[in-house]
Length: 479
Image (cartoon, rainbow, N blue to C red):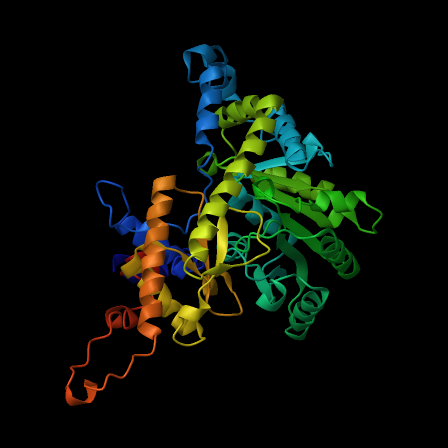
């Protein structure tokens, strides 16, 4: 209440809801935070399946750290480097850090491309990297095209503080949500009719939430499109190492090496170690731009969100170990593939289908449209509240990803151990079987007409009539 009364004292940014905290995507996190699952202390709590984290290979990281104690300046073995690392504050970053990151990016892409360490700009995670790129490329009121469905955080990362607009590029489940030239042209023309200047196209490859990759011809079509329109191309490739089955990941960097006409000044890559290595808390974000002016400007802006030198030192040491890096990439893909097989097999047992073309990411794009009471986004939200409150799973509804068709949900599968995954699958199976049973036609028994049966209350009335958020909103969000 005090915040609302004093909001007139604040800036428009501070008093706005541009962060997007009232989205169902973030509401699910709040529901989990108020009742988190624990195998012994709270076995009936909400299981977090709305957070795309890669927790399947921490044993490999821990083993490496035990064998390489000098990598940490806070260990007795690494203490001799503490002073020099603690006082280093050049926003170019440690040279060995930039070299190691470039080397890792090359290995993730099968050594089919090379990256210049001098074009590596660090940032506070991919969130900071995206905002910095937006600041460099567009003025307030100008726009980026974004193929939907897309990561809900983009509405915050690119719009909140920059004043930049996002224009959705439509896609459809009928062609597995492929990005088409026709859809790009339609979105571009609509922006022109609305008198909005388009400065760029943002793509995610691999896709969040679809878990799909862009094939070579689609990437070539995209590059030709931005070159013809003379607009920027920002490629989010933060899930590059999570491709666990064929076909292989193709980076936009590979396309640029081919015989294709393109102004390299228009192309920029956003990367991080949050997904591929499972280090979201280390806040290692990377901007790689082929544009000298963007590299220079982004590097100056990185002063507002540098990666700590302690982290740079550790990452430089780890990613310079080529034998470990190659083993980690190989094993991570193998474990992701195994987890994907187990999870999809469990869903298949109750007739739940997922996007068939998915072969990457830390999540599934799950089709629950047959469980909707009506094919509307209102019915999707109704089902989502039931899943949060009754099934006790935090999954993310498709509407929060700006999906054009109701019934799709993103469910993350790599942020939990095997036992928790089995609990989650058990809850899903119980719920789906119960829903299917209630929809089966009842047999008319010969004696039924002589009985006066009471109408049973619908199980989920309380949730259907609940407000948008599964829990009460904070004063900050209401403001």
